[in-house]
Image (cartoon, rainbow, N blue to C red; front, top):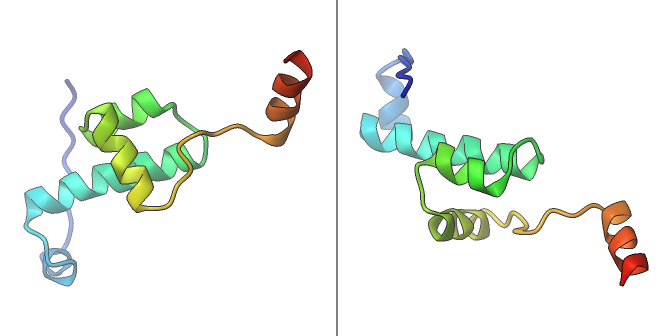
Length: 83
């Protein structure tokens, strides 16, 4: 597993009212949900990045009002034609 070091000002933690470990976990979830919303990564990979199980990641998506299923209009129309 790769370890990364991120340097942040101490004021960041008080601004978001989080301890450093809580901040890092929240940052992982925010990044993963954002990348998933942008369709850059799969739900499975996003859950892994967030450090969550699949069900917990789905809850995180719901909390942020990010659609669980990501199908664009063309994909949907192709599926309707095949049905």
